[in-house]
Image: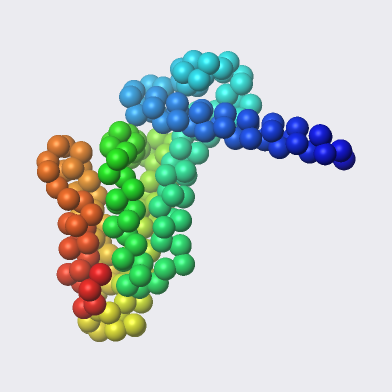
Length: 201
């Protein structure tokens, strides 16, 4: 294969990746503004100056595939921050995830709106959000158990109760922040987590 052919393919791949990002951003905006149920692939296509067929070329599963991709991208960014971290280091990384959201208020609000809409068991994202909550809760519980094992928490700590408390607090704090109250989500979430640990975060 000639060098020019390789460069051409690389260029096409970059263009395709950039186009997918544009489509995902438009999909997120549409889902945020009018909700998933009322949205359409044609509206998403219109916003990126493409045909509906062009959008479906990149996302063959249509609107459902777009929704999954939008949700997965946000979760992947968070996972990258805590990947490979154990116990106390896991908890030290959590506020960093919150910090990355502070300048993305619109995105956080859209995600919250989608999660609320997905409370309907018939919603295509219902299983995603349900699974996500289980993963988050499980990750917190595991980290609390590791903190106990490493001497960073009291031996009698109820890891499940602590995990549930922290998840509930951060979810609620996010809603309060979106409502317009002057809260420091990073400091407040760190302070709440610290209640269950004996080592300083």
